[in-house]
Length: 450
Image (cartoon, rainbow, N blue to C red; front, side, top):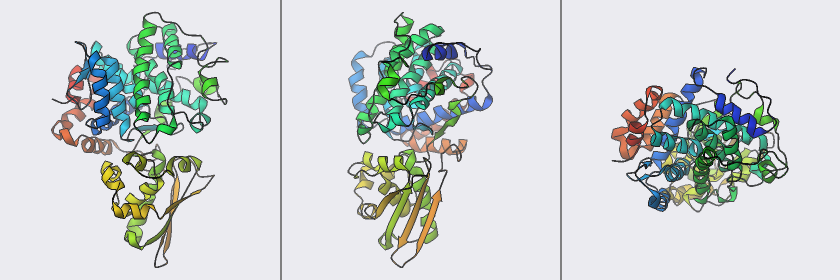
């Protein structure tokens, strides 16, 4: 057992004991390794978008608050105070849609949780083990909160990475601050008042603002609890609490079921492609069809994609910008069929306006397959000469059933960090040896820009 049994009356109380009483020593080797993989993927994503104007705006707006205790902004030379750095780094880690995914809830947990944990650790001279432990606990809390409100929460328009990420950020930072169980309970209650984010903003950078706020607000909640701030005991599950506000179908037991024994952290996977995870099976299927049929785009007559309601809800918007491309069924199919790959370049503004890709996007149609599980898709391609071929992908590359290897994650890191490639080997080496790092300051400085 990771924690002692607690007879808690409130959800926040149970989670507070879980976080406060968890220790690193019994943590299984597999979990420790997955935590390092999570940070490797987190830094890859943040480095890949560090020079994006959206990140630059966030850094500029946070800069007036910088002081002598400022910490690293990943991939940049500026330094910010911890809450500002958490905000900016969470935005950059989430911006490419290349981040980790909790398959059951569609939460992308590392961006809102690792960003504040690392900022706090750098400021206070904490160890690699401290951060790995806090990350695992924070992801666990966020994903269990997500389990309790899924899928209705997401379906009603709440951006679950942000709305649940703030709880994970608060839990992780509270652990790093060594708060008592009742203080962590308060931090989670404070976080409940700071939970926000909407799906309508997915095609814009406003989505990433909500993720940045989840990181910053989670850190703020932990710091306020440390200073004695209180929250309602049932801030999460009360009659006017977070769960009621966020959705009517609240499965309370999902938060505490097998808490400390069964880990949602192990259900988190790392994306092979920089787009919404529900489109990955389409890409895999179309790459396979491309290799089988070897047909140019002009000779493709029709592309039928079949998937569940979530896929259709997310992927049938018009493609006008590069952000639209990352949540487009048509674009995912077109790039895989024409180029046979799906790197960040395939989701750029140049790809959106590419005449050949645009023409093929118009030939792609989507059809509901109600029994298709989330993350699966079937693609049927028809050619002008009458050939017809179908491919069904149940477990896309990067899913928990078909995960990226350590070497593939390293390759992803190098590809994302292309603007500072000379540092990649040393960065990767230090991340794999994180458990032996007594102070993360040197590693985090290495993650910035000279």
